[in-house]
Image (cartoon, rainbow, N blue to C red):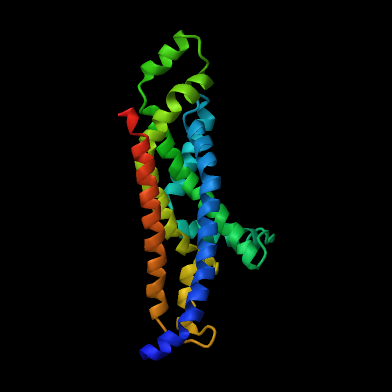
Length: 230
């Protein structure tokens, strides 16, 4: 394929990659919106003084963190229909997106929960004892004393997970979700009159690099703003 053909096909390829990248961004943001609060709830469950809840939560986290996300995607998408006879997701793009979002939220919530737990337990216990002596409730101690310190502690590991999430969204193509890698790979198989073209896949890397570059800058600035806790 010569350069003239590539330039001729460029608008078609860029349009398809833009559409796929919007799907990638949608999955990314939906995952964060769901995983942040769910991860905190799971962290509280794993630290609960009610031992059955604590043990159950830790087992779930161990299973999710110990198995590949790709397997979780396949199970969540296909299990209801093939085993239970109830294809709750349907067969359309919206159903595939809902299944992928569910799998990603559960997976990343379990990872976030361990980061939350480490951040909370890393705060000196004396601060809680001092708050109780002053007449504060445990909720007030968490919100007014521990929360910002916890955020400062978890920003670096959380940043790594967030950047990893951007790249992990490509795994959603295993259930045929049409994200950016799917869009780029389609031109190898034959899409919109283009077949056997591998060069669109190299352009997908540019999207990931730009996105991760912006996230790195934003998260780095957040970490600096929290530097007064040093």
